[in-house]
Amino acid sequence: MSFEQGISGLNAASKSLEVIGNNIANANTIGAKSSRAEFSDLYADSLTSQVGKNAGTGVQVAAVAQQFTQGTISSTGNDLDLAINGNGFFQVTRSDGTAAYTRAGQFKMDNQGNVVNNNGDTLTAYATDTSGVRLSSLPAKLQLPTNTLMAANATSSVSAAFNLDASTPTATASTAVTSIGSSLNVYDSLGIAIPLSLYFSKTASANTWNVYTSESGATPTLLGGLSFNADGTLKQTLDSTGTATGSKLLSLSLSSSSGATTPFTASVDFSAATQLGATFSVSALSQDGYAPGQLSNLKVSAAGLVQASYTNGQTQAVGQVALTNFRNPQGLSQLGGGDWGETAASGAGVRGAPGEGVLGSLQSGALEESNVDLTAELVNMMTSQRAYQANAQTIKTMDQVLQTLINLH
Image (cartoon, rainbow, N blue to C red; front, side, top):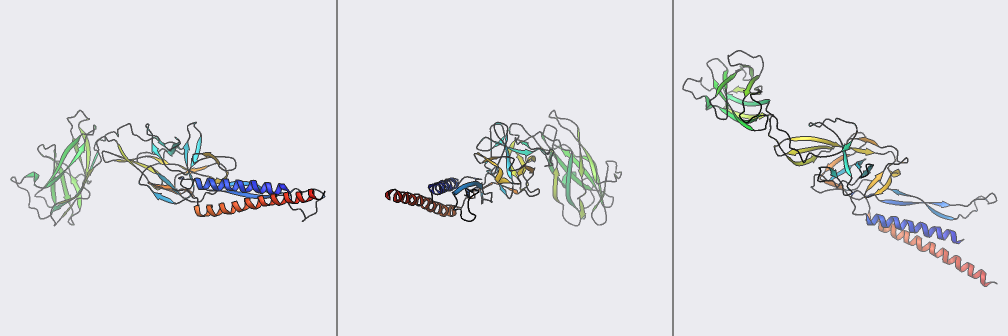
């Protein structure tokens, strides 16, 4: 026995206690991953040493390895809190422009609309069109449209689903045109609402109805007609002269007095209209125009699609969160603040959207807690403490042996 074994044991046990202490300190750190000290023995061989009779020279810390096991996911209710359920890391851009990777999903908006974490790192995402179709294979900083209005959209299509009572008598000159109908708002190019009413009047021709329209309460004008089959389904529409169109659409010319583009045209789809022996009822009446709107809310889907909701009731995709996975996550270098950096040991990152390949899914309004097991760490602390004490005892014993040898003289 020599002092070297005891000293190496003290150093190893001390390092183990440092690792355990760091784990315990980060037990409540979002996205933190526990570490463990991994040891290997030391041997000093020589050409004259006898095989199997070398006592060894102690122990060394071979590595401090991070454990990338899944942490518990807890709900927070904050839409920009994101948790990864499975493999992968959020890719963020640091203030110096370099890329880093993290499992901590505590994101928020800065005053420029950038989605950032507590380090000021900006979350990266794939650019998409408004329907969520990816436009690029390279992620970039995710910036939300907080300082701009969603532009207005003029109505170009109206869809009407309703039932006309087949037992309704044929209209006469004394029959009010506005007795059967419904209304909705359409929008001009500036996003100003225009009240539009649709009215229906049964004609003398079998299974045929006239369609009238009125803008902003004006006198109704004839738009065209509807011709139904014997089973109550729509056969086709008729134009204002009574000529069959061969389709189930009618073209509507709309006007605006607000300075917007005028007139503008919208098609009215009557394909869901029926004529059955039931009272008049409207089951759906919709159009595709809308007023301008401001960003009011955000939602992130399990696939990472960021959906922005606006005050005009519209929802548009503004990007798709990118995730990065590594062949050897334990080869990543720790940068602090919950960030890791890519190294040769980790291998190049493989990027994709959540749910693609082996990448995990996202959970919005939730965070991944630290994977530190406090009970296990406290047990490991006692074990390392005993190892430290035992190694100290070997040094004490060696000191007593040397003192005995000195006393022999």
